[in-house]
Length: 486
Image (cartoon, rainbow, N blue to C red; front, side, top):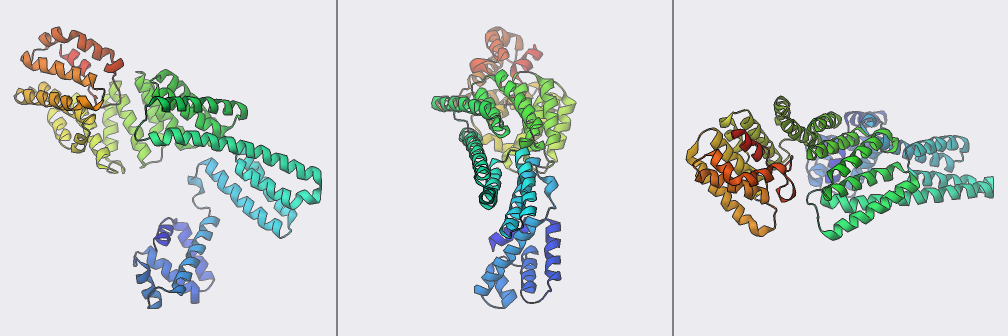
């Protein structure tokens, strides 16, 4: 029942309408009536199990007749989904071409089997043209094999051999594309949530990149270019060479914008988001805003990747001091359908808002949103640092000195507990030392500066162990905040 329920839930309005019309045309009696009855029971959520459905239709427990009914309904639905074209406009061009090409292959094959050669060849020629335009070597192999099987023998050895050579060429390209995809999957997919920074992984990625570059040069394949440029920019990001990564990100954008076999608005938006993120890392904040905006407009409305693009745009606007833009991004994100996709995502946006309210001098509102982002407190080696530092800055700027000592000591103890966990917390430790001296000197900025001038300079440079992440938890950059106070 579950499989059939999922299939019905995936149908579009026009496909449902077509199915009901199909049954009516064929007469609502006998099996058609039972299939339509079962379809409506599932669609209207009147039944949840085979037992419930069988009792309503046959007034008995599920049996072989009920199993046959489910199987035939499933076959009818799949047939209509295959025939219907209702949602083609939502597909990326290369996905639409792939679907159309496979449909033409099925049509051509059926006609060849019936001996309707002239029409079959015309259809398969259209399929070949589509497969060539969108670089579909697997489909090319099937088409050429069909022609070789049905026409190769009748047209003679030369024609047969021509089809065979063409098949081998497509096989070679298909093998290269599949190998490139395998490298891509092995390198990027395991690292979406946790990046592996071990030396052997870096070596593996470097070796894969060399092979992908060679494969792309030899084939000039758009599909291989898609995998090559993404692995390249990931590799240089992993090496912290953001300039080189940005160079490949821009090449990647050019490829997905101009190569039809891999073009889609989503991929273009994704490339723009990568450029925006790398521009942020390089301090090119206005460029980051421009590409983040393109990413936001390029992704489909209401999906998670649109919210992720808004996140990049928020950081870009904060870094470039475009506070009004940051406010617009926050307002839009707070109404986004995917804001509550997880507690962590929602609380992260509350944290962003708390920082924005602090920048605007709204300390009570900043505290209010800080209190809402409790899920971040579970990340004790990341977001919790940002949370505690912002708490202290709010107390200082609002003149509420009563709790500053306690909050600073709480931050120090948190850092102490993290020392044994191999985390690079040098920057946070430096901030904590400065704040401890600030308390010791009874909140005197000039005396604190005198003692920690070197520490503050290292924070300002923000390199090495003092690396500053413009998309990290330190949204209010501490060295800038301190400098403004002086």
